[in-house]
Length: 240
Image (cartoon, rainbow, N blue to C red; front, side):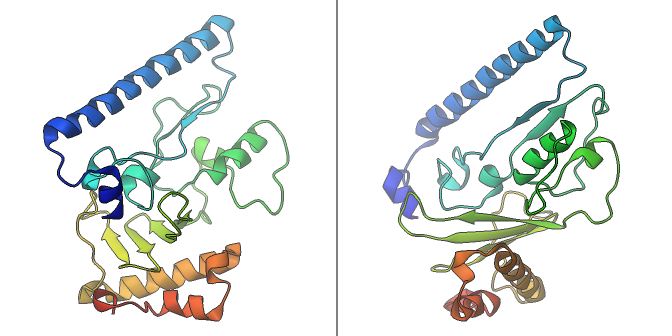
């Protein structure tokens, strides 16, 4: 609600929201045209088949979803689930779609390293996507991904998120946590925290998130006390 108050969004009508949405769609059209110019230039230079083209972005935008704009202190799919489109005719089969694997931005640097013959640093956390682009099925691929927010715009409001192919868990250390079944509720309108039938899923997601954060050296869980806050779900009301 703080974001609603900060941006003055609490009582906007659809007519007012339509201004945001129309500008967003206009930017989409502009980007689409610009990408077309890049691809056309590659064709003219005879480099299209041998060039790896990657289209992605660092984050999305709420653009009215959940009555919000911008991207801060939320972990909704509108913000964290971004496009990743790659073209490399000599390697990637046209029209191939890989939706069965969880990937993130850290994988891009590793992918470029392998594609160009450079070594991937041994301590790097990302993985090359080249096996996926070749149509392979790596048996040891990750099952989930972590995202972090450090409260840069609206005060020190930390968030951590764990997402797998079905569920998303958001740890809000100073507020109600969130759990969504993305298969049944893709728009994330029903928070399942506090629902008895999802208690086991919630415990599992909390433990998995804790393990990932500790392994990554996340400062938010550097003390035993904070680790217990996460693993035990120490919150008021519905989090119990």
